[in-house]
Structures are given as C-alpha cells and as structure tokens.
Length: 403
Ligand code: ASP
Figure (cartoon, rainbow, N blue to C red):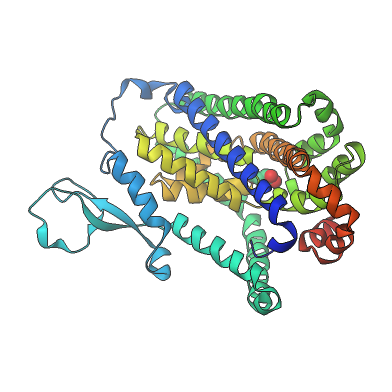
C-alpha cells in the first residue's frame, strides 16, 4: 500500500481498488457456494455422520460482531497471538473470558482465544501503508525497512521451500496412517479438485466476461483472443509475477491499452488481485471443514469470505503462494492446519488454473478501469502525465525489473 501514490493515481487507484475488492469477493462467494453445493469433503462416508453443533460454540451474530471487533485490535502485540472471541460461560467454550465476575449468567461475555488476529493486523498494515505513501520522502526510511524485511523473509522462505518435499512426505504419511479407507480420501480430494476447477471456470468464463461486457459493451471473446499468450504463460509458469511482462505486452500491444493504466494496475494486480486464489481458498477451507465434519454457520461463512479476500490479497504472485496464505485462512478459522497436506497432492494443477484466473482478472481490471477513466486519461495524456508516471511510479520500476 505504501507504493501507491494517491496523488497521481487517485481516481484510477480508487476504481482499481473497488474492482479488485468486488471481483475477489465474488470469487470467494462462488467458491463458498460451490463447496456448499457439491460438498466435496462429504462425498464418501462422512455424509451420514451428523456434526451439528461441533463448531457452534460461537453463534452467527457473535461471530460476525467478533470479526468487526477484531478489525481494530486494542493491542498490536497481543493481536499477534490472541484474538477477540465472545464466550458463553455456561457452555464449553475454549475461549478465556475477560473479567470473570459475572460468570453465573450465561449471557455472552468478552473473551479472547489463541490464534493470530489476522484481520486486525491487516487493517493496521493497510492503514500504515497508506499513511506512509502519503508522507512522501519522510516515510521512505520506514518503507525501505519494510521492503528490506519483506525481501529477507522471501529469501528465508525460498530456503525453507527446499525442505518442503521432506515435510510433505511426512504430512501425507500422517494422513495415510489416520485413514480408515484410502479410497475415501482419494475420492474427496478428486471432488475437491473438480469443485475448484469448476469454480475457476465459472469465474473466468462467466463472471469476469460478464463484468467486462456490462462495463465496456465489447465482445469478451475478442478480448480473450488478445491475452491468450498471457493466459498460457500463467498456466505454464504458475506465477502471475513471472507472467507480468507477457501480460503487459498483450495489454499494451494487442489491446492498445493506455500505459498509465497498465503500468499502474498490472504490477499491483500481479501481487494483490488474486480472484483464483480467493476462490480456491474458500473451497479448500470448506473442504477441510467437511472432511473433519465441522459445519460452518452463516457468521463463520461471512468471516471466511472476508479472511480469504484478505489472505488472497496478501499472497505473492509466485507458484503455490496461495498454499502459504491458506495456512492463515485455516488458522484464523480454527481449522486443522495439518490437513493442508490433502491440498498439496493436487496443487500442481490447481495452482496453474488459478494463476491463469488471477492473470485474467488483472487484464479485465485494466480494460474496465481504462474504460471508466477514458475521459481523464485523454486529458492527462495531453497534459503529459505519461512522462511523470514513467519517472516516478514504483510499480513501473517493478515491471521494468521483471521485464
Ligand atoms: N501462483 C499464484 C499466482 O502467481 C498465486 C497462488 O498460489 O494462488 O498468481
């Protein structure tokens, strides 16, 4: 967020932000609806077992209100390991009540539970990033520090990823040992893969082209023809960032999109706009809940959609980044993180298709925003803004570096 220069990109930035938010939320809801409809985690023996009430310790309204309370943590350090939770003293809640004086009543009380308050930390980070972006050179030292920490963590992650095959083998072995019937798990995972792919196809072939058509009144098929190269690169590399130079080429050369929009939106989109990842995370979370016979109530589903929207935004545009942010989704929704091994088996294919969906979302975003801002773009290109953008934009630097 600290990279976004609000003065230069005010209107385009706002439109891009709204587009990213709306499409990501739609993707998350598509995933949730499909997972609820198909029930991939209950395709086998699980469906006969009743699990109502297993996760009902927090009622829907309270789950939703807890989410709002968690948005603004009172203590940032505490938010790194505890979150707000409404507790019911008479029930068997795992949360710890705060101020236990009126424990005799069974009315809901303020409490906390173990776990990272991800949404609270995200809200703070976004606010701090925006403030830093508005501080200009004064905010640079802190911006540099965060960029440096981010780079160091990425390098550390790269080292850790070398060990992942060993970890995956043991995670899978753990699942196999627990299995009563391997065929059941195989069927569940196949259903899960099918559900995610169906969702990605719906989002990529129905929702996004519909948005494109409604806004621009142009033929989406012709648009798709111009970005086929970017989509196939995304399929091949599983990385939105690695695809970025091709995406820029397709949008600027094939579709003649304005560079003010492409050079601003595509680098940001490649790291922040992840419709495919949001959809996949929503399905995956519900799949793991179903495999474990846990039912999500309405409040938890709303919470889940917000968490996957935030987590997908935080995922980098690199292969299997969605798998990493999936851990955040699982821990924030109280689902067992070790079950991620079930998703790892098929992620090599799911990742490719969701990356193509991510890139498609970025491209349609550029077309939509360019269409909506065509008047300002026309005026500013006459005023020579292009020059300023090319010199100042940090996102421009990113695209040149990758290209
Ligand atoms: N591989 C995806 C991308 O680069 C991110 C993800 O894992 O969902 O867009």
